[in-house]
Structures are given as C-alpha cells and as structure tokens.
Image (cartoon, rainbow, N blue to C red):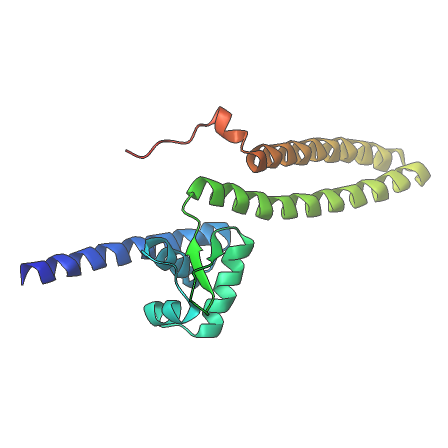
Length: 181
C-alpha cells in the first residue's frame, strides 16, 4: 500500500510541475495545452507517438499534431527514429537553454523586423512632409520625431545584435549556463 501511495505522490508531483511549465509557456506565446504537451514529452522516458500523447493528455490527435508542429518550429521537440516503429515518434529538446534562445530569437526577430519596417515607413513619410512643409513649427516637431525614430532604430538594431548573440550561443560567454546541482 505504501508503494502505491509513493507512486501516486510521484505522479502528482510530476503533473503539478507539468502544469507549471504549461502555465509559464504562456510567457512565450505558447498555449497551456501545447505547454502540457511539451511537459509530457519532457517527462516521458521514451519517445512518444501522437497516439501516446493523445492518451496521456486526453486531447485530440489533431491537437497533438498541431502542437507537435508548433513545438518543432520552436525547436523544443524533435522527431526520432526507432527501428521497427512505423509511427512518427517525438521527444522533447532537453536543453532548455537551447530551447529558450531559439524561441526568444524567433519571436523577437519577427517583432523587431516588423517594428523596424514600420519605423522606416514612418521616417520616410515624415522626411517627405518635412521637405515640403512651409510650417516651421511643424518642421520642428518633425525634426524632434525623426530624432526619436533614430533612437528607436538604434534600439532595434541593438536587439537584433542581442538575438544574433543568442542564436550563436555567444550569450553563454557573458551569462554562463548554470550546471545542475
């Protein structure tokens, strides 16, 4: 009876941590259900099929497939080959540092590039307006706003350099990975 209680406590503790992982994945734009999928894969002793995931999480196979694709795009899950197994198998990326830098880089790069594009368009419109306006007060406001946009562009270029530092792994020279205790 004690062993049964111990196993129950063990499973409950794992489930609680998987729930926390799922909840925190929201910070990275990942839904809790996809976060639970990652947690289930992370704690699985063996690679899992979509059917295994469906059974473990009680979600549809379509949801599992969509979630796995999303996690693969984020480099948090990878397919594995196992001789004699005809179904696709998946396992989690166990290096959370690698997962974070890939996720951070992909999400931030997309946003930064969009912001830079919008900034450049605004700058172009303001420069054209500044060149043709005869209103000196407006021209002065535009000049100040162009300085603000220039500052913004500098910031976004810095963020892009930070992303390159993460993608290359160079970030770990400045902020070393902490070894597990």
